[in-house]
Image (cartoon, rainbow, N blue to C red; front, top):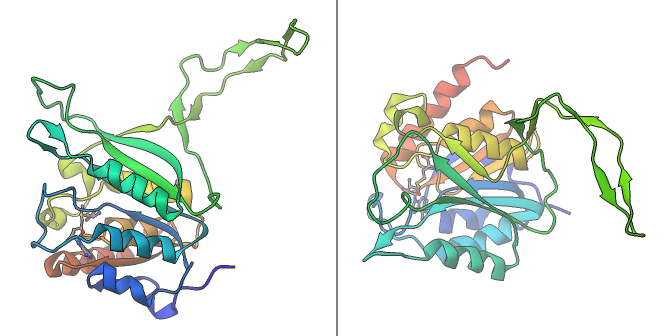
Length: 268
Ligand SMILES: C[S@@+](CC[C@H](N)C(=O)[O-])C[C@H]1O[C@@H](n2cnc3c(N)ncnc32)[C@H](O)[C@@H]1O
């Protein structure tokens, strides 16, 4: 049994510290959280302290059975070494009881920085954490097949060791995506230029694709660290409800403006 989210919190973005804000949520009420924390000390969003363990414990408490948390994070390099913070966070979530359902990489394309000692910058991970078995999975199928529309036959070795010919089948035009997703960055991550005040917006495409993959229409999508409101906006545009929290006043105000603008766009 899952609890319901209080109706006065549906489709709201609250200006608060999420470690405290989450206290008002009942146990097991959230079907999906999609969020991205501050990456070590890469950026200071107003100098607020980030209490990872407290936030992680609250996330586990408020997630419903079958609910999913997608945690998008990237390592920082200090003194020649990746900090390992994302590894620590991933195992901390596991120790709380989350299943490590999937580890994915969200790779920016079109930004080939030259690195003299590495094959590029640190990977951006999406940890897909589940409380039990995910209750909703819709795998995106848009990877062009190399051998499309080709009829092929395979053989399979059966228990007595002999090869058995399988029924021929024709490959489709597209297949299910792999675990590495490529996205545009910079000014292409959002449609509203005024959201540029935030130095680390999530790509709208990343938000949309995760929401579709791990939730159902009508679900509530929670982002406790919602910045300028990318996750709430994409929840709205994909027919879900949202709840956001943000500690930084100017980002919160921008998120409210963005959601008001998104509501003006006619849905299809
Ligand atoms: C990586 S950014 C998220 C950006 C967001 N996904 C977007 O697209 O705009 C992390 C955000 O967490 C906020 N934050 C940090 N600590 C917080 C806290 N304790 N409670 C709420 N928000 C917090 C920061 O102000 C920052 O906007």
